[in-house]
Structure formats: C-alpha cells, structure tokens
Length: 345
Image (cartoon, rainbow, N blue to C red; front, side, top):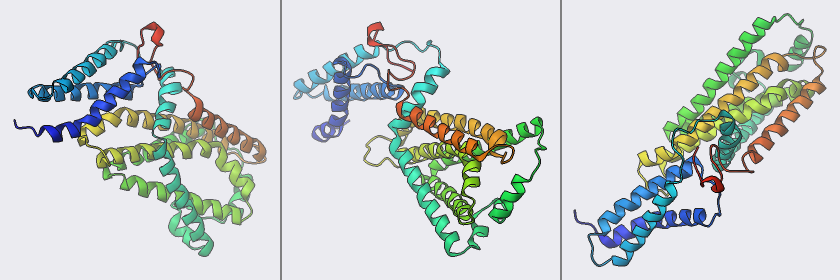
C-alpha cells in the first residue's frame, strides 16, 4: 500500500497530540479520574496511534517519530492497565449521582440549544395567540386546553375529589408512558441529523407558550403556576434533556469538524445517549407521579401556595443536582488514584 507520508502525518498528528495531552493530564494527576467516555476515547486513540505506528515504521526516514509513537503507546498501555476489570458491579447510586449529571454537563451546549429552541417556540406560540385568539385551536392539541381558562379554573376548583387511589395510579402510569414516549421520540428523531428533534422541541415550545399566554391573559396566573409548577419543573427539563440527546446524536451523524467515521462518532457518544435518555425517563417517572397525585388537585383541596412552593423547591433541587452532583469526586464507578488509579464506570 502506497502512503503519502507527509499527508498521513499531517492527518494523524492531532490524534497523537490528543493522546499525549490526555496522558499528561493523568500522569501529572491533573485529573484523578477518567469517565467512561474518556476511557473509551483513550482506547480509541491508543488503537489509532498503534495503526499509525505500523505504517510509519516502514519508513526508515522517520526514526524519531517512530520512537515518539512507541513512547506514546507504552505510556497509554501502562495507564490502561490500571483500569479495573469489567467484573466491577454497576451501581445505580453512582450512575445517578455522578454519571448522569456529569454527562449532562459535558454536553451542556446541546441542552442549551434545546432550551433555546423551546423558548423561541414559546415566544412564537404566545405571540400567535396574542395576535389571533383563534390560533389556539390550531396550535393546542389537547381539547381540555381549548376551553376558556376562567371557566376551566372554575370547573376544576368545584370538582369533587372522586378519583380513587387506583384511578390516580392508572392516570400516573398513563402520564409516565406518554411523556417517556415523547422523550424517546426526541432522541430517535436525532437520526434525521437532528432536524426532527429541532422541530419537536420548537413545537413543544409553541404549545407551552400558547397555553401560558392564554391563562395569563385571562388572569389565571396563580392557578397556572399551581397547576404546572409541581410537575412541569421536572417534566420540561426532562424533555429538554431528551432533546439534548437527540441533538447530540444528530451532531454525531453530521460530524462537523471531525475526521472520524460515522461509526466511530456514534460509538463515542453511545454511552452518553443511553445515560441522557435514561436520566430523562427517570425524571419523567417522578413528574408523572407528581402530576397525578398533586398537580391535578386544586383549591380548596390543596392550596395553590403549597403547590407553588413545592414546585420551586423541586426546581432548585434539580438545578443544584445537575450543576453540582459528581463534582466532589471522580465519575461514576471510579476509585481514587491512591487505590490503584482506577478509572472506569
């Protein structure tokens, strides 16, 4: 096989430099742990550097480069030997309190894009209803939201508490199923290079914006907050996280500024996709329970002030969790360097 050595070196040098930089961070203890994604990346860089060495070693004119690559591979091999075996048990607690929030923060730019799209959709939906009240019928897909807000509030507040525990349980299960399906769809539409996910996020924002404006305009802001906050502060971020996963998948398929193949890019984000969608599903389970057993009960059964405060506490807790969880130690499933510098999930 004929290899253009100069072009080959130019193409592969960023890979070698990335591997060298990663090894320096570990060797100098700049990082105590490597996450699962970083371990997978280290292994990929190791294999690619090894393949490059095999090609370059046939050229006698590059002895210094050969020695450099051999040194890189030796260092990488030594570091990978510290990774504990796959027999280590997976811990739900470590996954929840470290892997999930760390993965969320690692791909935060995609969450920010999902949030921006939803907000833009909300502005569009609210503006559409503001300029044309009849637009609500074309935007909102749920019949009970097409009613006059004041009349619906009066109806909800005068409704007796006739839902038995079994009925509430079925309602909760239905909500969880529906919301989880929406989240999975947000991820699955990433296969359309992210276009389907963009549309879904924007449309969800349009619906939300139309409903919010309709109730605020009718003077039902307190009812709206008491109704939406308890479950919405968890449900909406969960759907945004699912959209985050969908956009990440779309980016992996498009591969902007990446020289890796599609298969390589998909392998590199597979763990993150599973983590994000699993975390979103878990949040939606909680949101479904809250919606069925709290959000649907209004004054005089449950005071609006209680529901609003409950929702704000949920929001503060979720934000604290996503921003700070997992920062006090290494990623999920890792051990300290003192105990063998283990780095795995």
